Amino acid sequence: QPGGIDDESALFGDGLGLDSLDALQLAIALEEEFEVSIPEGDEAKAIFASVSAIARHIQQQRA
Image 1 (cartoon, rainbow, N blue to C red):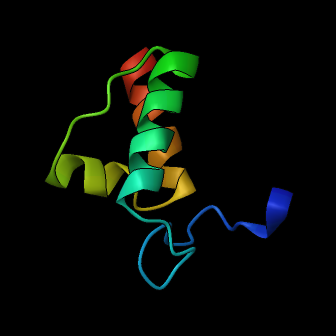
Image 2 (tube, rainbow, N blue to C red):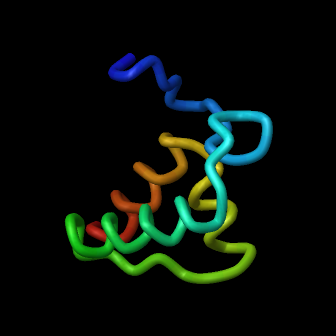
């Protein structure tokens, strides 16, 4: 895996240890790069659960 990040690894908490600032920066980058919308709150938490979850969200938004 590029950078040693498993597609199913948790991005927050005990996983990679990202925090809320990281989530905000990631959301902005994804919205700009892939022209998708990232909701706030619990739905965003589900989207940012893992790399796979982010990829699924992008695919759904672009379908």
